[in-house]
Length: 297
Image 1 (cartoon, rainbow, N blue to C red):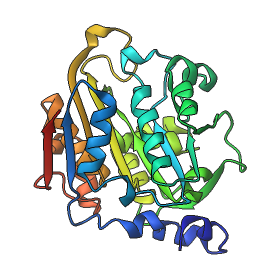
Image 2 (cartoon, rainbow, N blue to C red):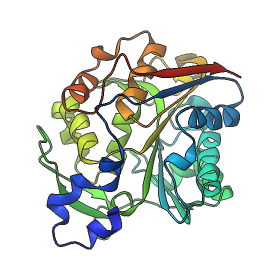
Image 3 (tube, one colour):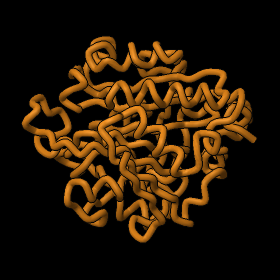
């Protein structure tokens, strides 16, 4: 049963956590992580996805796919406050090559979405690859559905973008940055952009909130843009001096494993981040000892 069938079921609220993406991942077994070092962003994305099983593992013929980059701020791509548009374009192209019928690209930005989408370069890149770019301006029932977060500690229920819930595959495309309250913002925190909640309230218990939303909504594939990481003044940045070139793309079927691997680029141990410790405790997979493959192009 896929997510669209769940949405037509009268029991959607109680069954939301049994969605196709939850069933598709054995989150306790340790997801393989692919790490590619290259200055060729497009080639690195394609190879990283190949290392974790190929796009056909995640996207099937006729699937409706949501690709969720970080477009939080009205910032040009060179400052790395948003996902690199070439990462987005490459992923959309991969989805269509796998037979996707539709690919939607969107975020719920902190800044004005119509400015952020254009300034980041993501709107143009996504549309050039054939995706439908959606603006999320208002939180209402046409866009968001309330779901119960089973076993949620801080989030007992949450509003989630319907396009994510109705999709056949959900692909998470974060950019790697420091964050003043979370420590780092990568894949797990990127899911704040699918929520219709008052997100300022999440910061009252940010690590529980981040881990809870990732229990409720599973990323089928996470591909981290770590081509240049923001090591200072995150998450907004605003200067090239805040960045460190790492020329790295990280892919995994497990969002916690993708984030754990990315931590190493910042010189951090995964268990230094509260939400990653909680992710492991809540069954989202190990944050150390997972299988990994790394290559340089």
